[in-house]
Image (cartoon, rainbow, N blue to C red; front, side, top):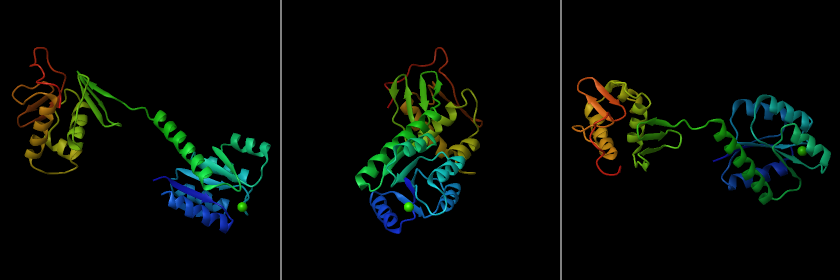
Length: 240
Ligand code: CA
């Protein structure tokens, strides 16, 4: 649910905006001055700011510059001034888009959707997914997808977390206590919990405890994941 900060001193416009945005299932906070807006963005994280240019305390372009000084949240300018030169300058100063008043709700929604789409795409680019590969296993922690030999694995949340944790340290024997703490977020528990999940995971990887390929249990020590050794038994069936 996107959260929106509405910066607008006109009570009438402001309550209309709040009503429409709330109906469109956005979370809305609103203020009437630029200084309040600065305080808001310093304390809360917003997905988009709608900034009226005619505010009582600061000129809109000043307000925009100060906002840009502390946050890169997308900003949509709402302006009554139909002045192209001014709008171009604001876009250069870091506004993401603008609307000329009076604007319709549909128009606002469309602009907001476009700005949110762009900022999400930007965020994904900024944090490229780090894919973990061990042998024929490939795990994408951000997308929560795992493949074995090109087959998509159908894992439960816990199985996925367990596999990702072990694959992140290939060849390292991880004590059960550490698995409980890291994967189950428990400081104690019984080993059976781990054994049960390991056995489900093994089945999905097409191996068994007696004929291991990736998952190796060292009795009394812990568990490790590593690429199948040469001469390891073949995978049993396509991964589940
Ligand atoms: Ca105003």
